Amino acid sequence: MTTAEQATDRIEDRVARRLGDAYGLDVVAVERVPFGVETDNFSVRLGDGGRVFAKAYRAGEDLRRQGTRVASARFARERGVPVPAVIPDRSGSDDQNGHYSLWLDTRNNPLQVIVAQTGYQGQERTMKIAKGTTTTASFVLKKE
Image (tube, rainbow, N blue to C red; front, side):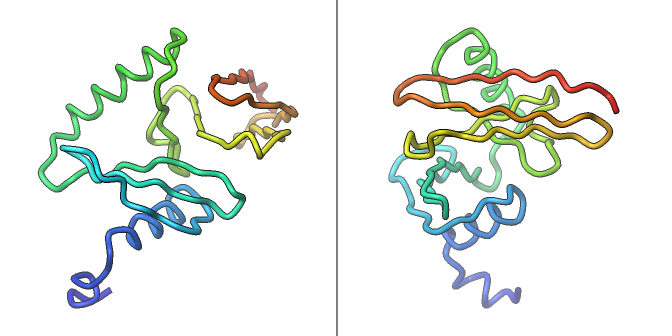
């Protein structure tokens, strides 16, 4: 992409491309959410009808401080506090412990959850989610 193209490229378009490339999400629409001091925030509609919330950190932000905030939210979530979760990218780099989270619409019920990792036996489970609650599925993968 040329510098001129980057200058006219909307941030919403860049967010859509990043979510598709790094997270494998089928993005249909990205709408800027009008709040955030250290981040640009977006409501993202997916091709399957689901929605996710995306944050884009602004240039110059202290990402170590943001990492501390994510770790604090993860700590709270693991103790039952209903806080937003981070969705790791395809490399899994956002969560070294194998925790993956999605915000899903209840219209996605029932969900077929498939967990797989190279060198391990995959597992699958059918689940239902309820509005306003956190649904958790834990898996222990066995080496092949």
